[in-house]
Length: 318
Image 1 (cartoon, rainbow, N blue to C red):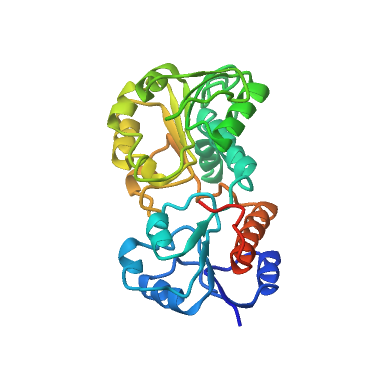
Image 2 (tube, helix red, strand yellow):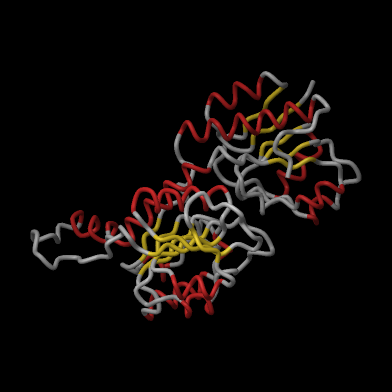
């Protein structure tokens, strides 16, 4: 009997689809798998659906001559928690779920842009604390979003979706930095030659690159020093793309005006230094947190499993 492991509680539709392929074990634990659990899983299951935090490392894989597992069908686009190259060396296919998350993640970027610029989180805290004394003409003046200059770091699917929302919905001027040339950004946009050029130009910056060794701390102290002091910074990519200590310093010293974050360098740990700042909006990694989106992600992962078990090339191998 084909054995499949789902490493977290997933939507019911995803579980039911996986059960059509074999004997499914659902790990009813919201926490990431430990190395011990993953070691056992690679020996016991034909297919595994891991997700963020389930760290499959080269060291872990080195303990196996030939793992039983044929595919790690990652639930999510980002797979920097999985050493894909080491998996391939052991005959394990790694797949992800691109496309399903694009609009939802772009929507969260817009949420953070608006919350940061209009001080929405700060205002809600004031109301909940019973400190609001009524409207005045100069109360909590923020940054008008319409017509601003948006800088996008990473012009892939999600970066383009963010740019489209900002240009078409808010009349923003768009520039971006991408490691390769982008022929069509989907909206009028200028590709900058360097990160510092983009940082110096933009009034709002959104990071939308994948997590990888190449993008680790791509956004650092030098980047924040190049930003305008009235600029807002938003990260919906991966936490370790940003040097979190440098971001905290930039926020504390007024190098930048404010930030909106959905991801963190040492997630789920969020430093107290961030939590106490009024000029930062903090979300608990809500990027794809909508039922229909999570169902689409899971069904894509199940299809990747089905393909590999049938001896086919999965549609979303990485």
